[in-house]
Length: 241
Image (tube, rainbow, N blue to C red; front, side, top):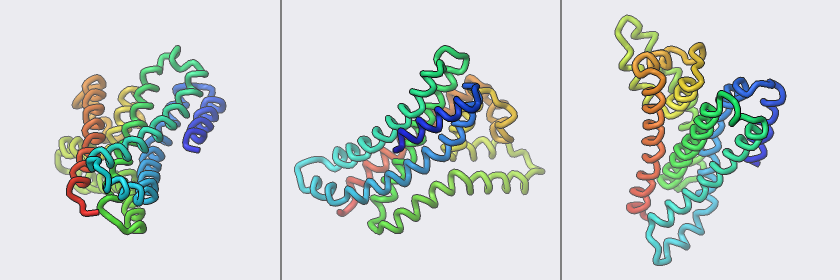
């Protein structure tokens, strides 16, 4: 279903817009919000539905790290594969790799994979720390709402309230603390959509430029991707099941 969704959306965007660059920009907004949401919700559902099987494996002579990391990475790989094939096939058929935006499209795919990994990791951490399913689902939705909507609202409110002070460094650090914002800026820096970058994106580009900004964004997303995996490993070793 996940593969068919992205396949249908990508095909429809290309067909109706008739322009690969415009289709990539439209797909960007879908990827930023949907990959994070599906990663959180599906990861939470998958963990709770597999909990009895995980407990069975824990009774076997297998290390906890192997069980939980293998379980998480298998689920995450399936989501990333469905997303990648669902977007890659329609754009490849339309000749994206023979166009001027082929690099931007690859960065779009990498962003979707990293966001899926980051928020799938969050879902596992939440599920492992909370045995109550309803609480786990509620926290997962709250985490998605915070990073996708509430965080930017709080940031803009702070920037408006403190507009009399120099806020460039504050804005830069604030962007780095939200993987969705980092992902958005990375795509926009590569596509050079200055009109859509907003205040924080414009500051990011002014301080680091397009080349260094893209490299720094990739580094931040990589750190965000590794952090949940590291925490899953620590929680798995200490949790009493």
